[in-house]
Length: 232
Image: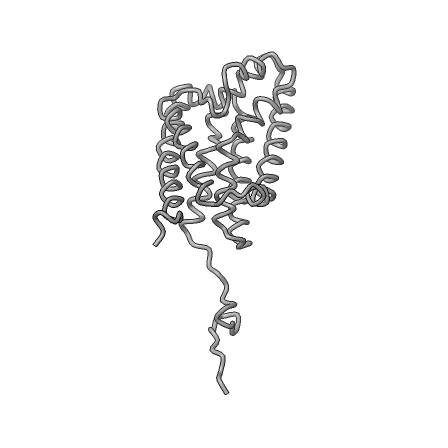
């Protein structure tokens, strides 16, 4: 009789096809780096002050709380349903990785030159947001926090997890952490702006831009490597 080999682990014996998959460190680093660079918590400080200039401290806090809640619902909703949407449209993961990488690279260029990125908010949208009585949903939540770049990176990372629950959990934790830091920065925007100043914000944003540009190129490379044209 043929014996079925097993793999011994501290928790017992597992058949070869049941060996638990180990979450690799590069995936964790990519998830957290992508979440923090694309949301850019520090970069939200001047925008928060700008769109809540006429609001009291209590009103600003309420606006920030609602903006974070709405953005979180959009981001995590897309993380859960995004794969089904891509599959229904017939969009493959390599195609989405390439498209997402190109979009992120364009955003990173604007971050490097400290310019307003049209991928997050146009001049017309900014004027509409300034005229709006409650800017929590627009423009703070959408598109500044949960914009096209954020949604694209969430979908790419969830797709890269290939259904592994632990890697999907890593993505959720990464974006939850970025949202928490963003909430803190927005809540304390006035104090932080006085502390680090506009120059400090631009320096941090440029550093995030450099990191985001490298991540964007890597997404494009990985996407191309998985296409029939380059796959081996």
